[in-house]
Figure: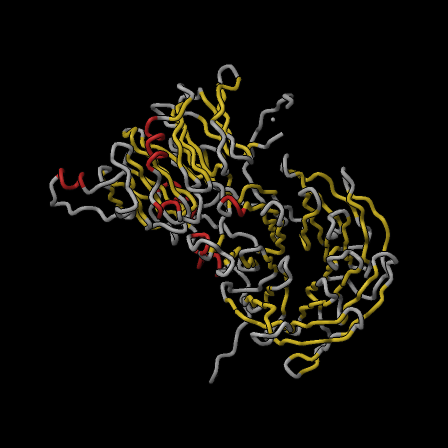
Length: 611
C-alpha cells in the first residue's frame, strides 16, 4: 500500500515507482537524468517523470449558456467543470465528482443556475459562488436520463427510468414538483422544449412522444424505423431530440440516422443515414439555421439550413461538414454562436470555430482541444525531493483550519505562501488576488482587479514580489511590501507581450523561482517550459520568440545582443508539472496522450476497403 503525504512517502513492498521516487534512476516511464541547457542558466539535471498515472474521465454532457458565454461540462465520474469562453476558454470553476453520482443530464436555467441529474434519481443544483452542491432532490422516478429547462428558464423537465416526464417549477431557493405528464412505456432518454414553450418532444426506445405542456397529454407518438444498414434491429434508441420553432422535431438514434419529423401530423419528413453506429448527441444554434451531431465513431457532423437555389426562398437541411477530432464516442455536443463544441469517451473537449462566424482571423479561429485541468495537480517537497499527486477520487489526508469569519462568499482556488512564511496570496473564482499578513492574520493589500481569471501565482523568495499569470497569457509582478506593480511589470505592460506568447491556447499552471538567480522567473503550461530573465530586453513582434540558442563559439557580446528575456523549451509535453529541486536539478512530470488512449475502451473498428 502506497502512503503519501507532504514530505514523506513509504511503500510496504518494493515497487518500481517507490524505487524511482528514492533514486529517480530506473522506471519504465522514468528516463535517466537528462541535461537541459539554457542561456545564462548553465545545465540542469532533469528528472523526467512519467509515472503519474493520471487519466481524465470521459465527458458525458455539455451545456452552453449563451447569456454568460460559459460552458458546463460533466464527466463520467460526476465531476462538473465551468469554462469561461470569454476568458480564453479558461476552466474557472470545478466541482469534484463522486462515484455514486453518475451524471446523465446537465442544463442551465434562468438566473445563471446550473442543474444536473443522473442515475441515482436526484436533481442537483450547484452553488456557483461557494463551489459546492446547493441541494439534491429525489425526483421519485428512478434513474434520470434526460433533463431540459424551459425557454423562459422558469421550469425544468426530467425524463425518468419509469417512463415518466416530471415538470418542476424553478423557485428562487430551489425547485418544486408541479406535475407528471402522461407516462410512457419505456425510459425517457432525451427531452427538448419547443421554443414557444407550448410543447415538448421526448425520445424513448423505438418512438418519440410529443406532449402538450398545458394538459400534460401525449398528442403524437412517432415510431422510428428499426432498420440499420438493411438489417432490422431489435431496438432503436432515441439518443437525442431537438424541437424547432416551426414545429420540426429532429431526432438522432442508435441506427445511425438523423431524422426530421412534422410534430403537427406526427409524420417523418426526411431521413439522413450518417453513421454505421449510434448518433448519440445533437445541439441546435439559437438561430435554428445550423445544428451539430456526434457519433459513436468519433465523427462530428455539421448540418446547415441552405437555400435550394440561389434565387429561391425555399430552404432545406444539408449535411455540410464532417469532422474527425475524436477517437471514441462523441457523447455530447454544444453549439455556441461561433463554434461547435464536442466531448466524449476520449476525454477531449474540442472547440472548432465556425470560420464564417469569426470576425477576426486570429488565435480565436484556431481549433482547441482541452484535455487536462487548468489547475495544478502536483506539489513538490524540495527538501525531501518528493512529489505529491492529486487524483480525482483519492486524496492525501489534510488537516484544514477552521474559521468563523463572515463576509470569505468567494471560494479560494489558488494559494501561494512566501518562502519566509510571512505572506499568503489567495485568488478566488474571479480575477481578484488578496495578500494576507500571516503573522497578524490580517489583509495586507489587494492587487488591482483584472478582467481575466488567475491561473497561477507565486511569491519570489528574495523580494516578496508576487508573480501572477492570467488566462489571457498576461503576467504581472506585484511588490507586496510596496503594494504596487514593480517597474519590470510596468515596462512589460507598456511594451506588451510578443503576439505568439499571447496566442498560446493553454494557461500557465505553475510559477517558481531560482534561489540563486533572483532575476529569473520559471513558469510552464501543458506544452512549454519558460525561463523569463528580467535582466534581458523583452522580445518584440519583429524578433523570434522561440529563438534558438546562439552557438557556443560566439562571443559573450554577440550572445547577449541576440538574446531576449524569454527562453522557451518544448521538449517536455504534455507537461503537468515542472519545478527546481535545487540549483541544478529540475523535475518534469509528463503525461503522454498515447498512455491515456491506451487505457480507454477500444473504439469502434471501421472496416477498410479491400479487407
